[in-house]
Structures are given as C-alpha cells and as structure tokens.
Length: 371
Image (cartoon, rainbow, N blue to C red; front, top):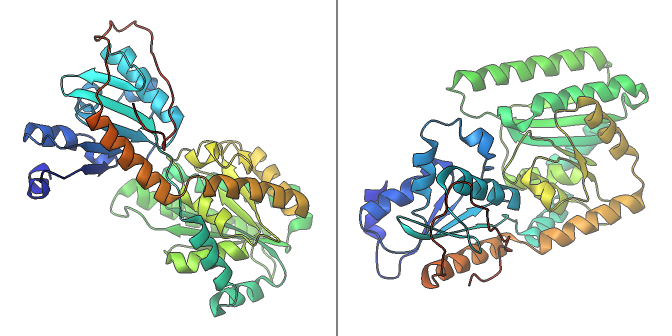
C-alpha cells in the first residue's frame, strides 16, 4: 500500500490515513523516504493500557504509529488511553500533546467526527410524504416505533438490546400492541464464522421474543437483515419516536447523530444511547444507558415512551446545538489544519523520560490551532 501511494507524492502532498487497518502505514511511508505531512485518524476506540498490552507486538504497533505527524482519536478518553500507554509502556514524555520519538515529533488529539446536520435534517423533513414511509406509519396502526440500525457485529450490543425490549414488555404488559421495535441489522463479515453464528443467534432470539409476546394483529419486533440507502434510513428515523443506539463500545456511532438530526423539531423523538459510544460525550442530553444492564435499558426504553413533549424538545434542542457546533466539515477542516500546523511548527520537547515519569497531558479542542 505504501509503495502504491508513492505515485501521489508531490511537493504539496498531504497524506491522511484512516483507521486501524493502517496503523503501521505511516512507518512504511517513512521507510520509503516520504517526508510530506502524514496524519492518522482512528475511527474505533483506543483501548486502555491494561487491554492493549494483551495484543501481540503492541510495542511495535504503537512505535510505528509515532511515524505520523498527527494521530487523531474520536474522544479525549481515547487520547488519554494512548498517552497513558506512551508514558507507562514506552517511557516517553508528552508536552502539550506532543511526543518525540525516532521518527521526530508526533501530536495527538481528539477530533470527534460530525455530520452535515442541517442537510440531514432537510432530507428528513422532505421524506415525510414519501410512499414507503407512509406505508410504515400505516402498518404500525397507531403504535409507537423504536428503531435500531447497526451492522451485525458483536460490539453493537444488539442481543442485549433485544433482551431489554423483551424485558420491558414483560414488566410493562400494557405496552403490548402500543409499541414496536424495528431493528435493521446489516450483514457484516459473513465469511467469518463468529459473525455467521451471531447472525443466526440474533434471528433465533427475535423469533423467541416475538413468539412470546405477539398477538394476531401485532408483532413486537420487526427484524430486517439487510441494508438500506441513507435516503431511506433518514425517513425511518423520522417516523420512529425512540432511537435505540446501545453498542458495548463504539468510536463515535454516527447513527445516533443522524437519528437526532432527522427528528421533527415540534415533536422530536427520544434517543436512548450507550454511555460507551463516543457520541455520548457530545449527546449527553440523551437517555444514557449501560448496555450490559438489561434491566436498566428496559427501564430507559419504558421511560422514553412516556417522556413529556416539553422534556423531549429540551433534550433535542440541547443535542442539536452540539451537532451544529461540530459538523462533518468542521471535523475535516480541523484535522487538516492541525496536521499542517503539526508539521510546520515543531515544539520544544523535554528528553524521553523513564517509564515511571509523570505524564504532562493537556487536552485540546479539535478545531484549535496547534502551537
């Protein structure tokens, strides 16, 4: 891959590498004598030091990452985990989010990814009259709808989410016939046996829950094992009164942001969001849940159905303010600006310290200039 990228290496080239598949690509480019700015952004969470040290060759991986001029993460927690590793495992010292290594100086920072919120909201408003969405509303026969949209992946917490919906119906039988749950589960990595087993287990669980609660004119869970275009999903989000986004761990999860942006401002739905999704750092006005706590999730979903309009509006407005303050374009511009500054402005760094040295870590906003 590095050799393939050499064709793009010109005096004005900047490289921006994305995600864990290419953790070591920067090092390969440097070994091929590429001296242009190279940035890296990790879309998934960076684990705690106690977890990453279990990965074979973890030192080689992290040392290779220091070939990047700028290493970006979704949240400040991820930055802190990475910084903790550099200090505790590699014996390095950070000053103002900069660290020196054999490759030179690397910067680290949080750059939470956003969406084009106003454009997404406009598409959602236009979708209201489309035929497929009026069909969905009609099929509900007045029942309220919750929605989840995920890849079939063990990290997404879909099984616990279904169990929580089951638990809610058991503890609040008056909701039977009054609410439904639409889970869109997009097949993923089907050639890997663990994912194939998960897909089978989810389908079996849905059948069990539906068999336990269904009536002749009502099925509690609609499980669709296929993908949809974003133009269709935006309408589904608009119809749903509750969004269920409950991954065990997620770098950001843009579905949560898309659900909020798609809501009707005069009658918005409620977002039930895992506290372990990166989006929870911004969307803290959602109903935050622990996806391992099935009873707690069941209670939160039950609360979402009955939330007063005034509270729903207040929570939605707070979340929309956060989304408009960090759009996808702002994320892009902030990272590129920081990468340019990281390469052109070299800080004065203290020498590498022993492993027990204290960490000097100062969080920076993604859009702030680096100096």
